[in-house]
Picture 1 (cartoon, rainbow, N blue to C red):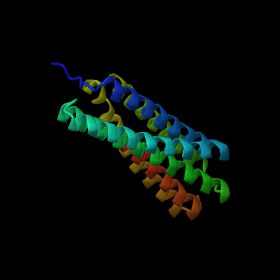
Picture 2 (cartoon, helix red, strand yellow):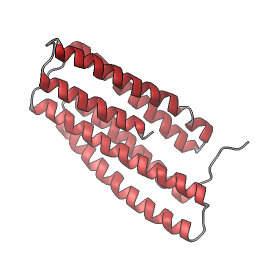
Picture 3 (cartoon, rainbow, N blue to C red):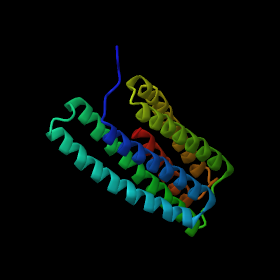
Length: 196
C-alpha cells in the first residue's frame, strides 16, 4: 500500500526551505545556549521572523490552491499541519535562545549533572528534528511513523530529568534560579520535540 502524500512541487519547495530555516534556528539556539553567543542569538530571532513570513506566505498560497481544487483535502490538511508545526518549532527555538540570554545575563551556573542532562536532551531534540526534516522531505508516512517513539522517549526523559532536578533543589545542590531556568529549558526542548 502506498503511504505517500502528494504535494505540488511549488508547495514542496516552500516547505523544504521552511524546514531548513527551522532546523537552523533550533541548531543556532542550542549553540547560543552552549556558547553564550549574542550574535547567534540575534540570528535565531531573524531566522524565526523569516520562518513566520514563510509560514504566512505558504499558508496563503496553499489555501488558494485548495480553493481552486489544485490539491485534495487530505494533502491540504497535512500540509497546513506541517506548516503550523514547523512555525512552532521556530518559536521554541526563540524560547530556548531567550533562556540562553537569561543564563548569560544572570550568570547562572548549572551543576555538572544538570549540564550533562541538558546535553542529552539537546542531542535527542536535534535527532528528532533531523528525522522530521527527513520524513517531510520524502513525504513518506512510514518514515514519519519512526518519529513518535523518539518523541515519547524525550517526554519520558524530560519528566525523569525534572524529577532529578527537583531532588537536587531539595538537597540544596543547586540554586532556585538555576533550577527554574533548567526546568524552562526542559519544557522548551520537550515542546520542540512535540511538534515533530
